[in-house]
Image (cartoon, rainbow, N blue to C red; front, side, top):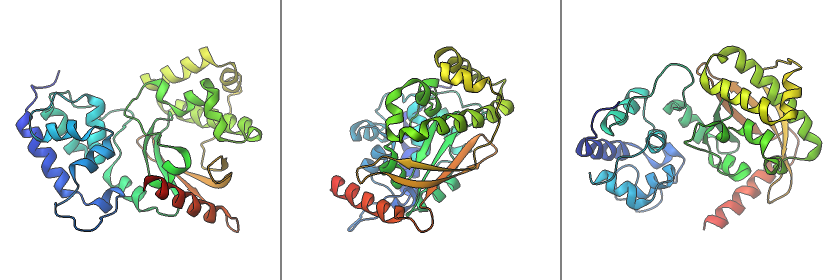
Length: 281
């Protein structure tokens, strides 16, 4: 059980952290005539998925107690370290997240790298398929899949085997390959974390709900996913990219999607960016 919520201290902490973050640190344009230090309130609201009014009330020490999901989003948006995140939880009256096992808190240094990738799509996810962070290009390519939820239903692996709509983004001829690679990679992660609740819940749930997953799981194929070629269905047509996975020790994966050498994918990504900018404008 956490300590009572300290609204005044929470408000001050949020203000100070917001003022310490530059727009370019979180992948936002600085823009002209910026009068405030750091991020604007509406930018924090945008990054966290909160309403501007709700976030404003938190900074004014008159908001309701934020949920753990909202705190996770705030910690990510404000690039908090583990210690700063724990402090945020205490001020909000919640128990500090357990640092053992799988972490859903993306380190600021990793987010910094993510935001600096302008010409490639990149994202951070857990080894159970929970999307933790995406750069702007990845959101244009895949849609905004980031979530503060940690249930099995939020897992991209769960969605792939349970929700047929998810597969529509990829060509039919690649579905079997994606399924095999996904299960082989998950089995490697399961071997490392098979006693942890989130891993058991995901695997047991898929075994019960998906005959395809159960059949692939029974093969006992193990292969840590490192390099794969994927084709995405987009507004500008199919785009084929090389997908490289860099695994971190805490169960998080940095995934980078880059154009194959000699392909038109780089031009396609630039066109996708232009269309995305026009839609926002």
